[in-house]
Length: 195
Image (cartoon, rainbow, N blue to C red; front, side, top):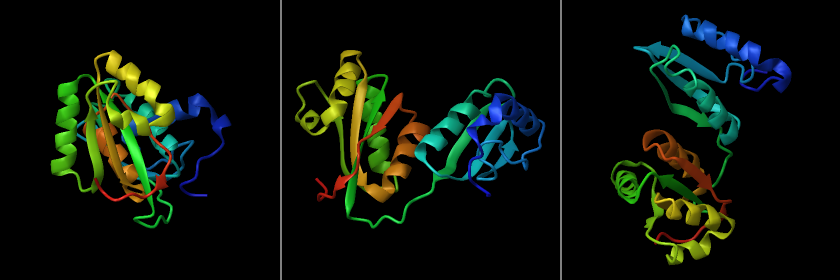
């Protein structure tokens, strides 16, 4: 079926062969795992990927796979247009909180400014965590240890809350455009007003 992954038993050799073909310009060949779920265009050493995958995990796995070829045939990978198929979610019903770590507090502040000024995603909440005693940690449940460790390591942490249908785009902004070191997505919860 087009756009659906094939068996994971297809092996790394087929994937490596596929990349060899792509790097010599055969971008129309379906991926051995993801099929024809996306289109590729090579331009100036940058591979531009457009399409939809079934889950955020598939998207992240493919991005990791593609980035492994930077310096080995590619200069960069543009995955801004590689999306996750959205379930038909109704806006305003669920909120999703994303937590992203950056190398330091200044970069976290810069990321927050970028999100506020340039993002098409409506942010219901967007804050940087200043210390382990910040009250925002009270709402993070099982994610508190990861945030505390990041703060102890001198990293800056940004927390954003968005309407659940916008969460994939917000995560892509944090991961791809702003290049967080890691981004965690909390489970969706009933929507609250912006604040």
